[in-house]
Figure 1 (spheres, rainbow, N blue to C red):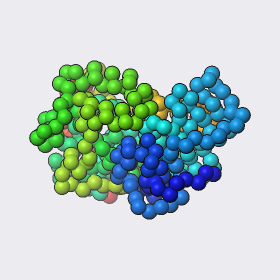
Figure 2: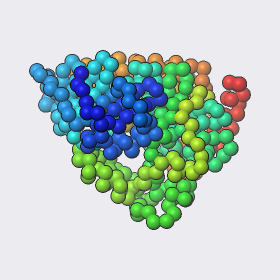
Figure 3: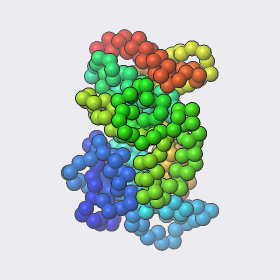
Figure 4: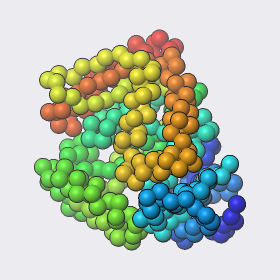
Length: 363
């Protein structure tokens, strides 16, 4: 095991996984921002270490020259990223921004400690948590804003969260990405002098372009930071700015999981689903909503047997199965023709109709 420099940024993920980031590494600025809600001054042995100092890999195998690997490490040659898995620690090395490497490793490390990372809007309602897993662009961020205007609701996160096997939902209030179509829903975030955003009608085109260039830009942290700061696609804001004066809930017992998706129908509809169905959708949705390089990390670790598919997905499925046991699961389908404003109105209405009876049953 390598020793690291004393100067580090430390993050505590709900008391289960600690992350230590070399403060001088190129990845530090981005990770400081995206993990800010978990920042801590306490120094504890880290389960995930991030820096820009790769480790030797003597006699490494090669996989079509894209990957170099040993029994405990994988190097992604084109991206200059190395992931090392020890018995009690993960180490991520690279000269670029490393959030896309950290996310799949964090998921794996949390699964080892009884919690699974999900892609969902997460809200607390009268002391209970509600998970709304969904694809990007479904209306999660708009729904969160409208629920926060109602009595009894508090914010946990609008993108990622962790679901523990004891059915505790663990929030992740990372910065929110506010886009042009959110103007009517978050009007206070568009007041005063702000960087210009593209018109809503062009946001999908700009988003597709961003997706294409993202894997290349993150190799150069200064360029990535500049493009993020001045991108006309979105603004990054903290939950405290989005919901001024409102508290953020960090954890709460799960009351229900409602998978939200767009579909080619004409009316919003809700259908009860099995726990097995929800487990499969949560695993698949999290994987497909990760950035492209994050997916490659999972694939590379599996292809080299550092973390085999069978091991990772079976363990994650078991955690989610335990977490959802006895909790109601539903599929909420919203017409694809609806705007984010219209979709979030329907999502809120159905949640307000569904949750009282669920909480009564669990009382």
